[in-house]
Length: 606
Image 1 (spheres, rainbow, N blue to C red):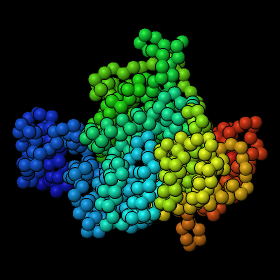
Image 2 (tube, rainbow, N blue to C red; image 1 turned 90 degrees about the vertical axis):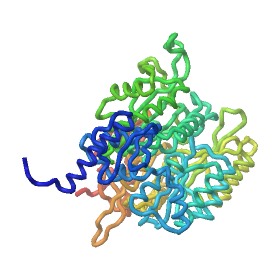
Image 3 (cartoon, rainbow, N blue to C red; image 1 turned 90 degrees about the horizontal axis):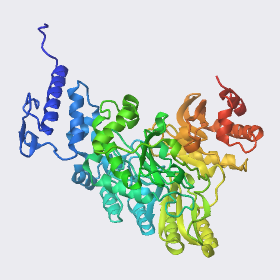
Image 4 (tube, rainbow, N blue to C red; image 1 turned 135 degrees about the horizontal axis):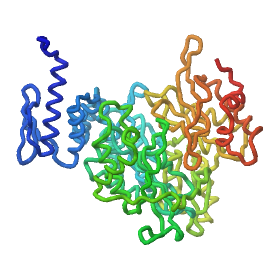
């Protein structure tokens, strides 16, 4: 044996190892073996649970996250810094601290920047020395009075505008340090919250935005997203995840909710009489899919599990708890549900979910299911008939998801005067106003145009998606929103095409604009040009979702943005010249080799 003393790092590791084992045993009601709470600290157990230096360790449902952290340390692994930060300070207990900091006009520092995200506040320096705030709007359903209030709040405490996200949600930007508390108070007074909209949490639960008004849908889904939202808020263990998490419900209607890009996807399907039985009555069910994360080039895959609508929320809760207990807490890049599924396989994972849920889940072969495809890729813009006779909804086009506070107030007035008072946000970064009488359509058209927006969109602009970009995000490699508008204007000036082409621009590998599923996907980078670094993009083609699902293939790399519009123009020109009858762009892009597609762009490739 070596006679050398342990190094400080080795002592810290051994201390953490034994303490983790003690905590795991203590919170499980087992005897403590070493009582190694660290130098000068004391771990003890009483009827109320375990304590360290007299501070109680959680014994409620949220303890499963602590047990997972302790098990990680006990296995000889090292927690990542975010897990250590959550261990040292419960993010949900920071309200007074956030308000006090706001009163002092200060931004958070160190790991508090990360922990404050649990309350929906993101300090986005150096892109902007301000907060961004993200909300929770389950199913994307708001009321006109809420939009009016949020617009007023944007004027008082933020940048005077609102951004619609790809989770049918809203964001404020340019919030000064001394306005953080006013924002938290202000949204709650409008019956909106931001808790859990950032950090390692379940993000806004999405649904089909035409729920209840879609003539083609199989089932309403906004009520399910709302039930899921309240389940999360009222189960503390839902805030103990190792990484962020997404849940979506799709009702089989005209506008996709992109459920196959979520960690949990619930896809409505039908069991017809011919395939029904006593054990499986005829009706509408949800197919459970898991593991979607297109930024990591994977879609949610069917599990073989079929659920009744009233079973979905509880099963989702069980899935989340299994993830809390078993997700990676050492490597943020591998901490999503996909990697548990990759490691375990779907069968083992579902077995653990069944143990957690306490019930065997119904398994049904796809051959017994009727899977519908009613999607209309232009249904989120313009005027369309609802299933309610004599009523229409209008999809309003927002330039890359942004509207001024004045425009927001005008849209709220339209919804109140001509609609049913609802505003519905979509995953396509725009909004829908339902309940319009046929006789009012012309007046609504004029009102939308009068506030500087439009209900009409080209095949390019309707499918244009862009993240915040470098104007508001420190991770982004280019100004995606501004670049998206420039690109759309360039293409619109040269083409009037009869098919939608989705173009997704995302600023970094986080893929907030889901570049891998666009017909054309662009991910930002910085490109060397002479002595300067300029905005540029890597180009993908052939992505899709739903029945067209697929990850886009790399086409071009490191293209300066100023060179990009003519290259995309050439590509689309080649598509129009060489496509087969009724061939979509995605089918064309998948039929052609990368070399053939690259030649159409006329790009010079080193």
